[in-house]
Amino acid sequence: MLGYMLLFILIALVAGYFGFFALAGTAALIAKVLFVLALIFIVARGVMDAVRGRAPL
Image (tube, rainbow, N blue to C red; front, side):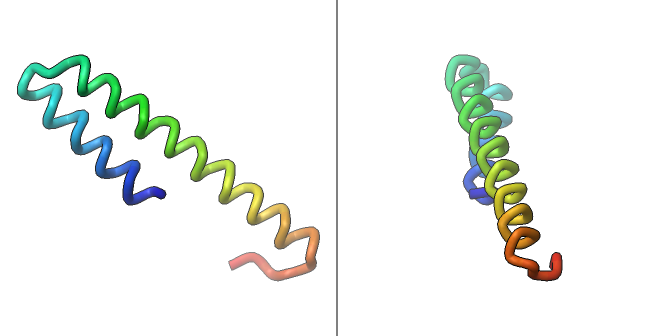
């Protein structure tokens, strides 16, 4: 998921450089959503590991 986020950030940067601002905005929005989802999954995984008594990595 973080790999896709980096891909969409790259697409946004390239599209913005070449003047495709609508595409750049859309790609940046998708990257932000993927970043937030990845953070939610990471936090949820940490909470679930803490509840189960596993040591953090």
